[in-house]
Structure formats: C-alpha cells, structure tokens
Image 1 (cartoon, rainbow, N blue to C red):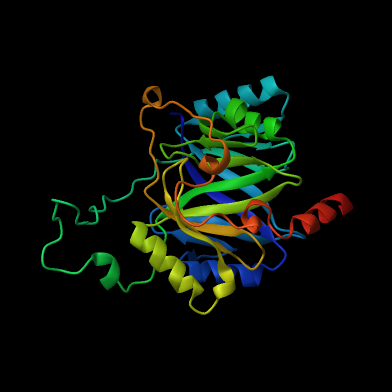
Image 2: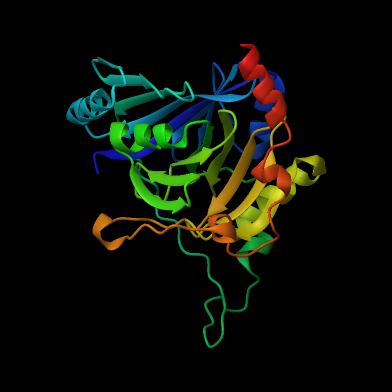
Length: 306
C-alpha cells in the first residue's frame, strides 16, 4: 500500500486551553504549539483555536513522492485542485473544508507487546498470579492515533475524495451513510458519516488491551463522570473494544484495542452493515447523543452564519 499511516489530525475548538487539559488527562503527551504525542506515533494531535469545533487538518504518510503524484492525478480526475509542493501534497475536501496533507514518512514501527495472558476453558495461560489488568497502576498512555470520524453534508463527495482522490481503501460500509476507509493495515483510519453539518465526531486512540480500555476510561471518569458517552463494548465493523468519552469542546474521544488488521487486500471482503451491526456487536446501546451530538443544532447555526 502506497499510503501507510494516519500521521496526525488537527482539531479546531473554541476553548483550546480546556481541551488541551483534557487530552493531557487522556494520556497524550503535551508538546509545543498545541501538539500532543503518543507513545509510538509521535506528534499526532494538534489543538488550535476555532470559532466552532471542527476537523481542520488530516495528515497521511506515504512511501515516496511518486505516491503524492498518484494522489494529485486522482484528485485532478475528480476536479479537485491540489498543490504539490516538494515533499507535500495539500488538498481541501470540498464538502467539509478539511485540509488533507500527504507526505513521505517512515512507516510507524511499534515494539512487539506480548499478548496479555487470559485463562479460558481447558487453557491456563496465567499460573498462580492475578490478572495483569487488575494489578497495573501506571497511567494509560495511548500507543497511536487510530482513526478520525468526519461528519459531512455530502457523503458521496467526501467518500470519493478519500477513496478515489487520496487512495484510501474501503473496508466496510454502513448502508449509504457511513464508509470505513483505511490508509494503513488498520481496519479504518477515517470513517465518513452522512450528517446535517460538517463536524469532527471523534478521534480514536490505541491502547494495549481491553483492560487498558477500561482502566483508561475509569481514570478519566473518576473526577469527571460527565465525560462518559458510551462503553464498554465491542464494535462489529473493526471488531475493536471501545469506550467513548467527551472533551470540553464536545468532540468524542475513544480508547480502543484489538482492531481488525487487513494485511492482504485480496483476503478481505468489505461488507455492508445495517442497523445495530453498523455500530456495535455487544455492550450497552449507544445513547442518542452519540448518533446525533447535542450541539449539532448549534453547529448548524454557526455554519450558516459564517
């Protein structure tokens, strides 16, 4: 695959100070100029001021400049202008205004983390000790950025921008309202959602296992129960465990583990998931505010007034 990683996202918010403090609590490492780093992925989130919350920029890693030229050609065929300047290709998704930047980067390498030992029927992997997940006391630090979810008023155009223009691949679909798209071996790095206004729905961050999904969420909720949105559960599309929380600007953030990985495109068949399968396999049902965030009306009003 010419594209190989979701490098970073930039979110615009009206309250960058509060939002930055939240992502510090979430376990990301503050850097300079609004940036935050993960353990394995480096600088992967930037928080900048904006009148309303939105996804400002998404950066994607490619193998070399030939890959940028291929993306530029794909965008040109769609009638989308792109600027190819040395080691970066920049284009704006027409429906949402999100800036997409492709650049040659080294592939992310994550150290091999030993599998968590779990006992099961007829299978004892953990002998004479308590489960690791209940004796860990270190703070959760996400390993890498997994994906971003973008609401758009033109589902077909935004999906085509990422798929036909930039070169993302389709992993699964949610009827005609959601497209799980990948630029790496992970099941999805961008999820495009049909929505009444363009907005950032959530960002998702990898942790080691389901125990760390739960530990991370519980730590975030200890003094701030209002942060809870949805979890614990397991998705059908992507198969990952999840727990969603809400930052002070209204964006959701997800701890996840055990995502499907597609290392051979020929061995994966995209499916169309209808109803609950598009959202989850097990867990509590999603609250209405997850499907339709409570500030959507305000975001719509803001978009029409700009």
